[in-house]
Image 1 (cartoon, rainbow, N blue to C red):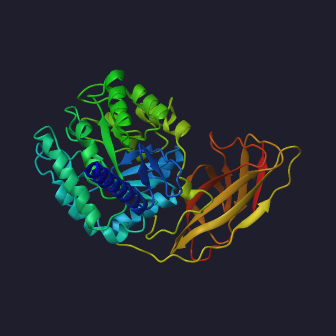
Image 2: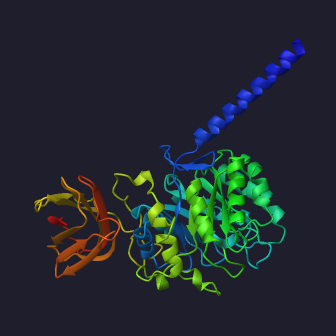
Length: 465
């Protein structure tokens, strides 16, 4: 009996030590982190990704895409980067990408595309090489754990030897942690991301256990392999049954390898609280141009796929919720210029922000509104502004804000409003989804502008309908 008590005591001690270790590991994670099947922000609020991918590494001048993606309701953007298989994205360029995400209140999933199709596609990098790239970027990634998810390598194995994915992914995660990264890590499946041989599904638990911080989310790409509702629901259910976190890191409405069931993908993601990221904003080639969501990076030219993804049933606009890290905060200061075509090495210094200028308008009858203008950030030759509109004592169905610049400022880009100008006078009107405000409710819109060095805050007026 004594032997049994000793054995039982040892087993209990081991269990307690295991629980303590898991608790310490979970506490060690900062910023975005996983808990069971969910992704949480640092404050414990659940965050469900709703967004798209942007091919930044091939179109580095298309920086307006970040604001345009946000304008359609996304809360996340997955950004394609390269460490050398294509023109490498430098640390300063990546810092600018993060700044653009933060300015536009987007969670930034940074992915290394070099690994795509390793073992089957010529020139593909290993996951070890991908980790080398991330380690080289550590100086601009540290401290961004609330805003950045690191997608270690895109589709890191093709269909040749996908079983090697398990050990390679464990090693990559371990190296990232050993290098000091505390970010939420995302790992893509083999089989070109579609896991049709179930290597990721069947080994996910052991891969998750290899993360000392227990802060890894799995990413499945859903194209032709997922062309039936049964295949979609079966895969999602397997991860929920295992209690492991999963996002749909890519999917489309059609593909050369089959016709994915996007309706079920989006409906199941919504009902299960699973994140999804469509592929992709614009610039596709090689025969899959139909996956562009807008034509020629023009937010005013949504394709049928873009309409479905952003505005359709269970789409981004009706289901996305902005990360609470941005709630009640102005966009953070950029580390580089948010101009339409930034130089990766450019990093103009930011000027102190001007104070906001509240300017309530008279309530024309039963309906009224007020508007507050502020300069969120300034840099040499440019600035970022934000206007908050608040309904008065009664609900309103629309609003118009006007102001006149005194120092020659011009607006170059806007989101969450329609802006026209007449000389130095600016008129901003609500868009379809933010005109209706309940009594006392508020919304905001933002813009980028140019200035000649003087940037006084104008008085603004607001009229309601």
